[in-house]
Length: 505
Picture 1 (cartoon, rainbow, N blue to C red):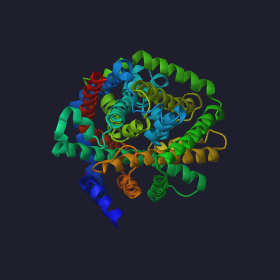
Picture 2: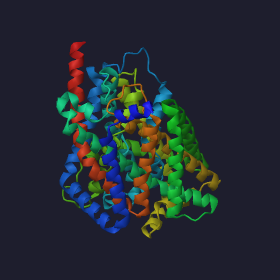
Picture 3: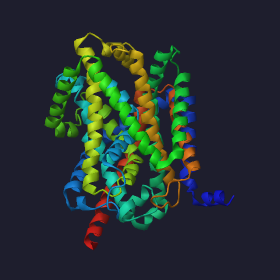
Picture 4: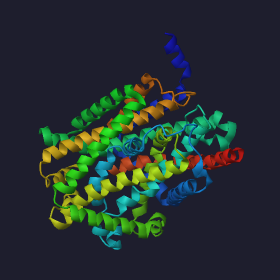
């Protein structure tokens, strides 16, 4: 009884109740009036994309530049914590960074994103899908995407391990700039925006990628694909990562390693199983060169005349998407980076993150592109005629040997990615739920279980209401707008506090 009473006094109930009410309310609205809510989301997204596209673009390029300055300036020498060596081995640390940040949507997008670009007028204007449908995924999931995570990971790692602050919240990272104002209304507003953003981001991830998992299970078992099956799978995933909650951070580390092994097997299956290794690697090599040559141009192009709306539909969406995910994943990255320098955290984060994402898109994506360009499998035409991306991916799998075995590997790998990512996320968002929580102390398992359940409510509502990919993307863009401002505050706060720390050394 005393333990329960103690926990109740430790919890920041506003940080739990307000997002709960908000999520339940939105879930009800999406299910009752899905068409009207979709129109409203589209209108808000259109306004933000048209009027504030430059805002997202400048933040993206600016944060990337900030990480480079962190790494190659005197700030890079700062050690995150008073320890002799890092708490985690380089491999364990690296795979945790990749598997706990990308979730299963990286597999969905790796397999299908090239086809999403196929009908874009901008892609045709630039030279066609062979060159640019293989390049743009590397851009949208590349250095700028990872810079959002890495910049905040360094800031949070400094806050937790160097300054030893016991309020593991977004607002606390703004204290060097905002001072005691974060103890009042402004701090509470920052944290509520952060928590709600995280819920929106996870909902988008679940809602986009889970239908592929359902389609895979349906193909293997001959059970008809349906919304009901998708929801059952969502609940099963929630059960898996809820169970892993009870194993703490060590469980996350082990799960991340196992997840990486499954990921490697899937990559090898695609690379060598379909007989397109040469095409895959050459197209990937060309895409890397194309990205390097055109990086600045891609990052700054806003289509001022709105001839194609490509950056508004894609680049701005992705920058907002990464901003939303910044609420939690950098905290986790900062926590596991104890003992590393800021330089090592930044450059190592880029090395592991880009290696994982680039390899995934190059192998999985270019295999599907090979079927489109060389073997007459018209994936793009199938989608244009109303076919789902999940069904299109199944068609790609049908060109590989031992199809059902490959789909089973895909399903297991997706579940492992989900479990690893959301185990880490529940750890972080549970820390948000406390008024104060010392570093090294894990949140109560009951609090983590509560958030594990919360994470599944919104995606079920979005899937049940049959919201389109455009509407799901719109949620991230809308919520990502205020998060961009908070990210800037955190980065500025880091440099201010780190400069003060170096002067005292």
